[in-house]
View 1 (tube, rainbow, N blue to C red):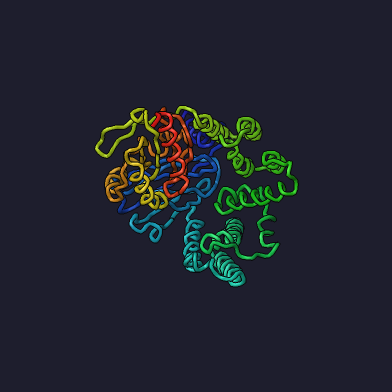
View 2 (view 1 turned 90 degrees about the horizontal axis):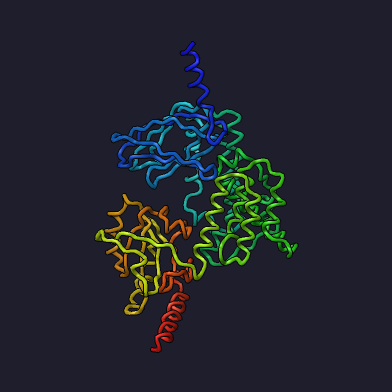
Length: 465
């Protein structure tokens, strides 16, 4: 009887919840050869899900995953990331060579069918789309023909597959969303490269505007659908506010999401309102209260609270939160050590291409203000394991200033206080360590010299120079 009870308890324990909700269970195992990574990260940002899976010295891993929703998760080995479809009851084995991860990855076991099809779909898509610049920078008629032809090829591949009818139905929608997102991006890509907008028919965006926004399964499985949900929100908001100039975005979202059944889809749209909670918006505190009333999940409430705290922390004139970071030689520099000087902080990482493009301009700025009361602090948000790469790269660009590395990448207290997510990012503080601009002009921005000159001239006037 005891054994029966124990077995029953073990079986039912897999249904006990995270935060009171029933969980699903899958087994994930496999081997990654030629890797020095000691763990894999499994994540899904919309589900606020993240799990670390240990990898042994030979590249083997195995873990039982407990999760709330069947979905497409991100499977990350270092900076290499791929999609993995996981559902309740899967026993999925993954193998790959880290030196050529995307070409060597293979799936076997329960749940492998949909993942292996996804690999075939990705390979065909890469072949048909080819160079993105060549794909988009063609006349609209040619672009539309290619996009329609490619969608038909993907659907043909799907029809020939051995997937279940349910899986085929899901992938049919995924393929349609791929088509729609490419359709949607034609103008953006042309404008980026040609610096002009193509002439589009008046009804060009109608397929996006006609999308159904409350498909929870698709939302959890398809990143493109999540992007399109937000794109439809932006377009419909723009049209609604143009038609009614008294309408604000909070009222629009409240009305347009009130009947949505999926909390994930609904709160994804509501989260777009978080941009209201910044200190450039005079009403950010009252907007915070209104947005908070629309939310249900603790995760998004916590994120909104963090936005409010950032707005409060980084308002001009507020004393900045400090840091105490390592130099190249291992010694430390604290923000308080720089008191008496204006402080221009440039935040970057060795893996950030746009950051590296700023380096020549940063070098020029630092040289131009040599001898002035401005401390230039260049902070890397690389992980500790990439510290050697950071030390090697800094002398290559030789920009000058004080080079430091964050004590916990983007998760350090200073970075979180300023909500640093996208880099490069620049911050400007006064001589007392108070915030002047929490999102200052970047080194390549001509406005930066104007701002710095005003500070220097103001300081000289105060000193009577």
